[in-house]
Length: 513
Image 1 (cartoon, helix red, strand yellow):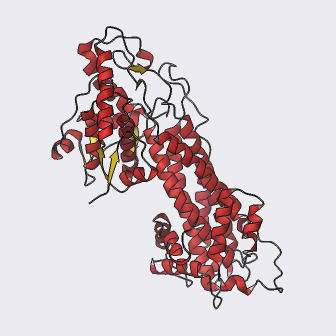
Image 2 (cartoon, rainbow, N blue to C red; image 1 turned 180 degrees about the vertical axis):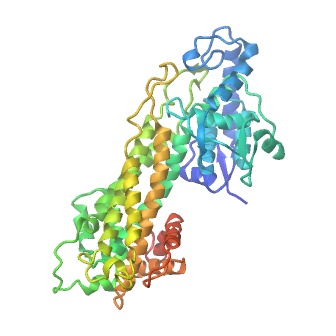
Image 3 (cartoon, helix red, strand yellow; image 1 turned 90 degrees about the vertical axis):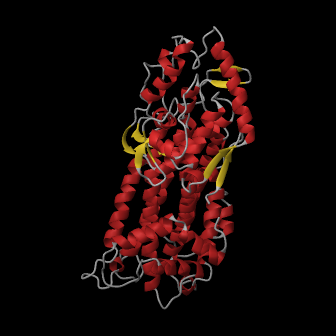
């Protein structure tokens, strides 16, 4: 039975988002949310009945807000709004992204600041529980007046229109999927169409998933760095806590502490620790790993703070506040867009230093006695030469993805929306960047593992030895003649992506920081 997430008037957690978006948790509204929804709806109904126009309730929207809409046309107004705004184009976005944005829209509805009816919110929860996923397209959101087009495609499904993916993943008409689940489409009334589409939920959902994934990847990057330091006969002395304390960045201290723990009891490190060692300093890519990984950690921490604030927000326009409805600008995606960009930047840099550590293994002038390209028979065999090419291609792409989307703005809605955040675009870029970092770190891990095998009879640390065993059991072979390498890279990628590399280390030395 899938886990259950209760959406109430309080904020969801990042864990809640991952659970629903990625793991298929079912969703229900809490009792306080139902009360808040009913109370806010009564405010909207009163304003809808009043002779004075109220924006979003008895008027048009955006640049068309000056037109008063008579009561008999307001249902048509809501349908027209959703249909016209469901104007996305391009490939379908991932199921987890759509589920995430649906959950986050439901969370805003549950605060009682939007004015939708309880039954409308309950239908949105039911779509999540029944794994009915509206088709949302790559292009359409400027990240300003919310993720309008993506959310409109979800609202369209509530109306029984458009296309969805059912629980099996089949593409079916929304009306058919709703009927199969025993659900009835909603007839939207005043204010509801706007409330369903005016939020930062798409970009926030992708931010939440990225924060989760980067938390795992940065710990994995520490594992990879430790394996590289060890395999390249580097020193662990530079990671000592007293050295880190004189530059007190918390992320740096955490990364350095991980490296110390990972390298503890390494026979390879011990083999060159004595007075005969003539190594003065390791290369930056080894020695400065905590500074780079730590800076990325601190940036991730800032992004998590922003995400937490956004998860505690009610993003809509207009909003119900007490007994009145007010226009506002809280739908602008700038705060979320900025941290999405920040994370893309540090993702590119962590991948860059990982690629540099990998490259050192393959160069016989820098790898301290290992064969060129870690090849079995250099010249006949190419070893891991082209695996590093793959890394380099990805890192180059990540540098392009790090170019900020949030500094761009294209006016829309007849200059009513004259400054937009491009937060959706920033989020889409970050998803690609996280995937790229996963692949780069995986190639470093498999390269370092081969190097550790080649250092025999010297014995690696208990923690890094556990990673080598995991790879060998998971389809990534050790040194030997050349073979088809791509399947092994993909096996290593999955071990990194799933968190298996971190888990196997933590079974040996305890939880990484």
